[in-house]
Image (cartoon, rainbow, N blue to C red; front, side, top):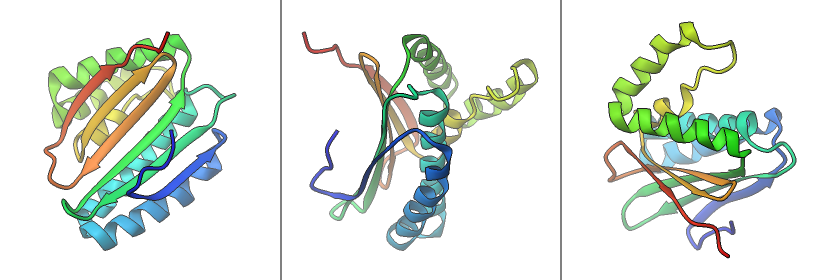
Length: 168
């Protein structure tokens, strides 16, 4: 992934926890200035959850990429987090996306909270459902590469996932 023409932040970093908070704080501050307090705070939440998922579930040997872009004409902010994941993790992600798609953002989040009591500690799987309650959320997979895209602006909260075939 390379920065787009509308990127205001593009960073590639190893999957380590100490990068998440400063990136969230920067994105949230920027988004509040562009989108207002509520949507800016939601953008901070989204970047935190998506980066945390990339670090927690991604390939520890591959970098995480964050691209934040602002589209002036539509006053929309797009957050894209990309990383590589093991095939078994991608299958778990696909099942979780289907669950979110079936329930819808808010109900999927409530269902995930109820599910917590049955999951091992550290595997709450709340992040994507939480993001889907505040943003239009798209997930793309290409082989082992996963990109989560949260859109803020004139987009209704939803989830759409797609698998892009690997190039031969």
